[in-house]
Length: 523
Image 1 (tube, helix red, strand yellow):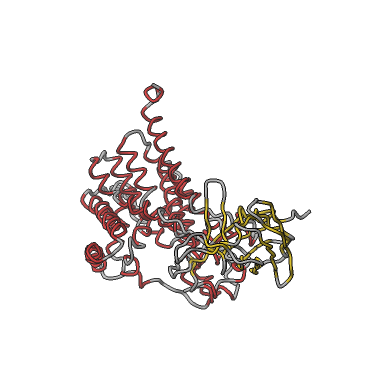
Image 2 (image 1 turned 90 degrees about the vertical axis):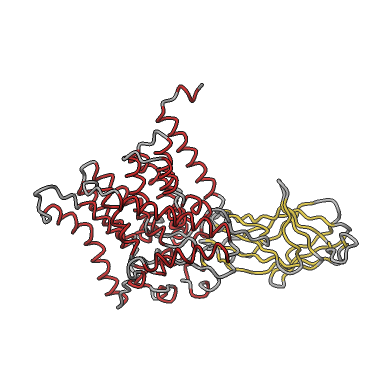
């Protein structure tokens, strides 16, 4: 009865709100008590040795297997957006190329107030914030009040490009959010504001300046060259031009990125061939299938705009510009599953959905054009997990992680407790990061299968000992007031008890339950 009493627009608004909750849930799964959202940066062990010193003083998630990606570079630039730090060259694959997309790095530095312990976390949150702003803008642009407009709205927000930008902490979604704001401003006849927004989008991603096609609203008998149009275009491109000159001055180099382009259509066709071939050869069938569906969707978007000419529409001009640009994208942009092209062409996805909505296109077209949603959702499917991590958290400004070393058998969990068994002699690896190192305490509950005496040492200094039995009791030991990693070595005076008669049965001496670290508050 309540739903019936609501207007059609209000009911679909509730549907949009539900999607926002789903997105929030999917993203929140990546939050880590110590690392925050830094797993989005996709920094791996190959990049770990060359990272800037500031990244060694804050908790940044490192992938054990190779798979590094570009977000790690933009986050490190955020620690010195002036590019004057000599550490940046060693940490980047190409500093001149990465530095062109400077705005997200600057925003992270500004919003974090220059605090090195906040910058990386603010940077990782920028895409999430941009998603919420974009959700509002696209809702206003589309005025969602039926199933087709709802699909168009979701098609932009959950597209392969949008969610990949979040998952990899890149600049594309931030750029799209600003472009949407600029287009929204033009529709409200605020062209000067739109020019400043386009300039900002260009500083997020240089290809965003293709969106200036929105200004080419030529009317009959109107000259192409007008002072107003020249003024708007100049405002839009000048900041990026000046910034490129600064990069050249600061680094002595400029990376054009021309390798990302190729002869028209050639690498687009190769993308089709490689995707279809992978359906029969790849072990990651779901990844390949969703990539194929995303490619079908993107192709549908471009075909629809090419087949329905509407020069008078700024949204059509935006879409056709990126549709044409799609044909020139090179192998580095197309390769991978799904590939970077879906992020680069996010303005095409936005334009397609706006045009399809306003032309009242068929439901089937909207569904096929937005098949990339499946690939987008797949981006947020797998959350990195470390089964050797016994504790992670933050207390009074100190982030701490405890991982299991030799002698401990792994983490076990119930709905209320986490514990680990030790064979008799075991190591806990403690890592802490603090703005100002302070004393801390390790708290835990301890029990054993048979009576024994357990002690613990840090740096060869005895810091804990007690008699343990099958009855649980609380334990506590003092931790050094220092940053970095060190070992806490636990020992039992008696060997453990075999848990079963199986040949691979564990030898269980004692267990540590609900381990946690509490730092001392500083005045």
